[in-house]
Amino acid sequence: MLAVGLKTRGMHFSGAFFRNEAGPVIGTMASSSFNSHGPVTMSITSLIEADRKHLIHPVVNYRAHEARGVTILESAHGSFVRDADGNELLDAFAGLWCVNVGYGQQSIVEAAAAQMKKLPYATGYFHFGSEPAIELAAQLVERSPASLQHVYFTLGGSDAIDSAVRFITHYFNAIGQPQKKQFISLARGYHGSSSVGSGLTALPTFHRHFDLPLPHQHYIASPYAYRNDFADDAALIAASAAALEAKVAALGAENVAAFFCEPIQGSGGVIVPPVGWLKAMRDTCRKLGILFVADEVITGFGRTGPLFACEAEGVEPDLMTVAKGLTAGYAPMGAVLMSDEVYRGIADGSPDAAIGHGFTYSGHPVSAAIGLEVMRLYHEGGLLANAAALGPRFAQGLDALLAHPLVGDSRHRGLLGALELVADKDTKAGFDAALKLPDRIAAAAYRNRLIFRAFGDSILGFAPALSYSADEFDLLFERLRRTLDDVLAEPDVRAALDSKTRVAAC
Ligand code: PLP
Image 1: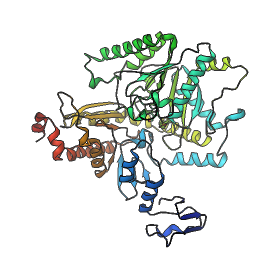
Image 2 (image 1 turned 90 degrees about the vertical axis):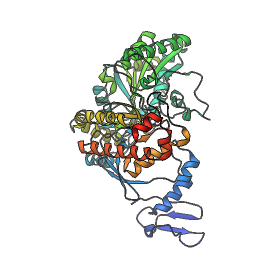
Image 3 (image 1 turned 135 degrees about the vertical axis):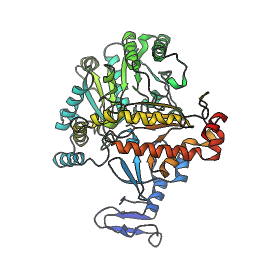
Image 4 (image 1 turned 180 degrees about the vertical axis):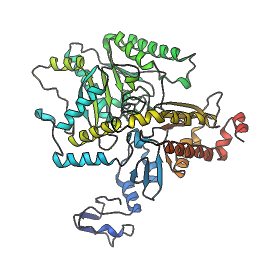
C-alpha cells in the first residue's frame, strides 16, 4: 500500500478528518481514504496526479515528466522491485548504484529499529557524539587507504563533494597558501549537484542556466578509450597525466588546489580507465603539489571488486568522498575521508576558532547504525566475496553482447559496467538523437521487466547488487538480449544501422 498525507486546493486532511470542500469525495480516491490511524491512502491515479502537481523530481525535464507521469515503485525484495501495478522488475542498477546489498535485508531493518528506539538522534555539535557514528568513522579509517585518517559525515554524495571543496579551501587559507583556488576535474565527470560541486561535474545538463562552471573550475579530457585512438593503455595513461600537467602549468601550480576524479566515471557513461590510470593521476598530483581527491561515491563499497577502487592500485588520496553503498541506500549518508596532513592544516591553522562547517544530521546515529550493519554484510556477510565470484559472469554476459548488431563497446570492472550502442561499428557513429533510442531502450527493458540506466548518448549502465545470484545474472542477460532484439526489430532503428550491420542482423 502507498500512503501519503494530502493537502491540495479545496481539500484538507488532518488526523481523522478528510473533506473535500469543492464537492463530493473525488472519485479516484481509494475507499481507504478515511483513516483515523494514519495518513490517507490514495489510489494510484490520485498519486500520479498529486505527483504531477507537487513533486519535483531530480534531473528530469519537468514538462516531459508531467506529460509522462510518475512510475511508482511500491516494494522490493532481494534483486527485484515491484511497481504499483504489481510488475516485478529485476533491478540491474541497484536503485541508483547504491543498494549494493539488495533489498529487504532484515538485519539492517533491525539495526535501524534498535537504534531508533535507543537514540534516534544525536547532534555532533557542541562536542556531542554517538556510538554508531564513532564506530563507523573508525571502521572507515581502518578499511580505507592508509592516508585517510579522519571522517566527516554528510547526508549523501553532493554534500560530501561540497564539504571536500570547503575543507580544501579552508586548508590552503589556513596554511598560508590562499592563492590556491583553482580546481580541475575530468570531462564527463560527475561530482553531484551542489552549487559548487555541479561545476566540477562536467555534464552540460548540470550547467545550463545554473551559471556554471565557475571561473576557477577547469576540465581535462576523460580517459575514454573507446572514443579515442590511443595505441595502448600506456599511451592513454600518459596522455591523461600530460593533460593534467599541461592544465596545471597553464593555471600555475601555485594557484591550483586540487584534482577531483572518479576512479571509474559513472554518470558520464561508465568510462573505465585502464588499470594504472588512477595511480598515474595520483602520482602526477603529488609531483605537481596539488591535492588528489578520489570521488568513490559509486565505486566505493565493493562496486568494482575491493571495498574501494583506490585499494586495487594502492592509491592513497588526500581526500576521498563516499556515499551510496555506505548505507546501501537504506538511509541517507555520505562522508569525506581526509588525510592527517589536511586535517592538521585545518586544525592548527585555527587554534582558537571553530571551523564553521556542520550539518544537523552529520553522523546521524540511525544512518550510522545502518552503515555498520551494511559494512558487516559486505565482509562477514560474504557480499564482497559473492561479487568477486560472480564478477566474471557479469563481464562475460556484457562482452557476449558485443556480437549484437547494436553494441559497439562493452566495458566493466567488478559489478560496474556498460554497453555503448552505435549505428556503425566501424566508424563508431552514434544514433540520430531524433530516434530517442535511450528512451526506447528503457521502455523496452521495462516491458521485459528489467531496470538499468539508459544514458542520453546510447550508453547503457549496469550496477547489479553485490548479492546477485548466478541465476539472476542469467535472467539479467536473457532480458537484456531480448530488449536489444526488440528495439532492433523496430524498422526505423534497423534502418539507422549501417548497411553492413543491417545485412548481418538479418
Ligand atoms: N559523486 C559521484 C561520483 C556520484 O556518482 C554522485 C551521484 O551519483 C555524487 C557524487 C552525488 O551523490 P548524491 O546524489 O548522493 O548527492
